[in-house]
Length: 312
Image (cartoon, rainbow, N blue to C red; front, side, top):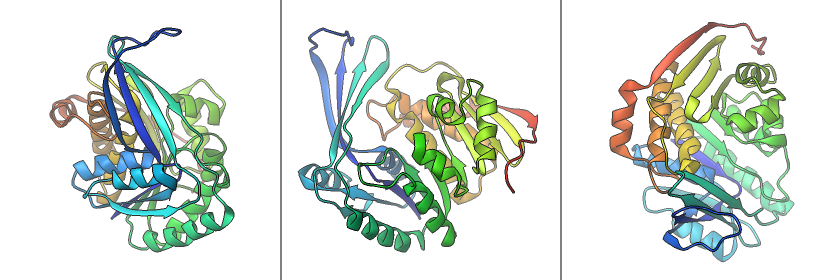
C-alpha cells in the first residue's frame, strides 16, 4: 500500500484562457474544480496506474468537505479534520503559450492538538505502508520539521519515504534521511544554494537524502543514488499544463520504490509519465496514450560513478 500525505489540501480551480495578459480582462474558455494538493494529485495518478492508495492529511470546513467528497471511489480517505476552512488554489492555463500561472492560498491555521492527532493516525497508517509520499506546503501552525518527524515515523515502521517539498521543511526533512527527495530546479537552487544542478544534488545527499531526483523541466530528470549519477531526458519539448508533472513524477517514483524497479527503468517511466501529465488538462491526470508513446524513447544517460560524501 502507498500512503500519500497532503498536509495543506486544496480545492483546485483551473481556468483555461486563450492567452494570459497582465492588466487585462480575460474570457475563461474552460473551468474545472477538483480535490487537490500535491499528495492528492500523486494519489490520483497512482490510482490511474492501478495501485492501492490511502490519502491522508489535514482538511477542514466546507472546502475540506468538498475536497474529501471529490476524492472518488478509488482513493481511501484518511484525512484528519481540523478547525478552519481548507484552502483553494487557482491555476490559469494559457492556451497560446502552453503554460500555467498558479495562485496558492496559505491554508487554515492548525492547532497543536490537531497536529498531535494527525501524528497518531499517521503512525497507524505507516504500519501497513510500503511507501509514504510527503508532498507540498505546510499550513500555518504545522511545525517546520513536520516532514522530518513523518520520515522518522515511517522509517520506524519499515516504509520508504519520498519528500517533495521546499524551503525549511525540505532542509529539516533531509536530517531524517528520507529515501528520495524530488526538488524541481527552483527548489534545488534555493535549498542547495547553487545554480549548478549536479552540485546541488550532491549537496542534498550530503545533507542526508539517500537519493535525489531533481526535475529540470524540459531537460528531464537528474538523479544521484548510491554514488551513481543518471540523467533521463524526454523525447521532445511538451507544451500544455505543467502543474501536475512533478506529482506524476513522484507517483512513478513511489511505484518504483514499492516494486523494486531498477533506477534506469524507474527514471524512464518517471519522465514518460510526467511528460504525459503535461498533456492532461488537470493536475493529477495524464495522457495514457502519450505515456505509452514516450516511454520507449526516453533517453537515460549514466553520468558515471561519483563520490559525493553522502552519509552511509
